[in-house]
Length: 429
Image 1 (cartoon, helix red, strand yellow):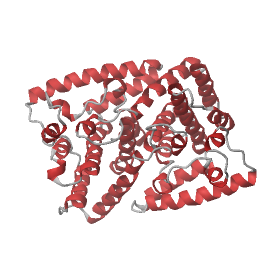
Image 2: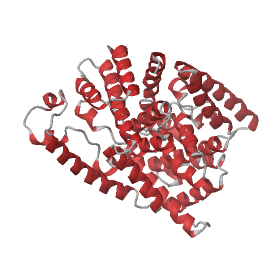
Image 3: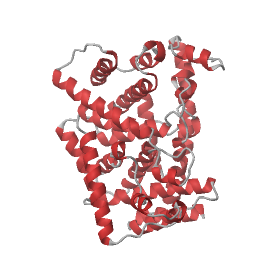
């Protein structure tokens, strides 16, 4: 693999990692404390694209990539929310929130003018972001984003509607379903664009769950969509779950599990496309679901057992990668495997059997490294963690990453992952 490709990939990954730190503007303006980031939102949108796109029989590989790429431009353009329709907002929180609870009334001409301005700003930002890549990768990312913006193909049109549905779910999570407290802004924003029959049924199921409204769809369809909604409400918890390893290392406001999954899935896309023998759709799905168990088990680290059994200082223990015997490793693996398996059974309980089996199977292949995709993804996972550590180290001179380097060199054996490791050494040292 060309060193120019690796250099471009690393620069791209460093830049998109900023999306883990950029809160979504709408929630900030509405006064939400510690709101989700753009990366957090992208994670659940990509999962929605997978599960609901599968029901629509759309191209799943394309629709997941479309969801992953739809907000990449916001690295430089920032999060331009539906509130850009409001020309001026009061500085005082209470006055501002009161206005934002209602949808802005603008003419089609005004909306078009503002929309074109937003499109051009985001297009310039995206082209700046993907300049690191060769023409093939650059064209793929740009065409996916353009399709999302213009709704040329079914996948782009579907993800554009999904984006608003995911935001609606998040608004209900923050403000509840009481119209006095939550306003009607988010529902009007959704209803302005959603026209897909499946998504209209999904909205009915949301209305039934949170607003007690009667719905008219086939009973089997209603039950399946209710199960999918329950699943998405569960995985939304990963947006609020900070990575335990960074907490142990005293990192302030660390990435969430959802944010980590976003980075890993992006790496799976770009590096997975270079390995033609792998099933890229499978690799993307595996990346999205590999840590769902954290919803019930909490985020875990290789140090958990050691920290609970020793009197040594936490800082001293974390300076080295845990060294365990083969027997100890196997015992730890079996314990974690069983706990995670129970968690996955619980998480997928409301999904139809075939989908439940698929998600659990993907996780098992990842945990046991029993397929080419399951063997490759753990290497990417370690590199995603190492990269995040290097970025923290760059900000904090007291932060150290040598245990992560040790872990990465222990697990990585493919030319692609070794090449990225080499590029990280050059970039950060």
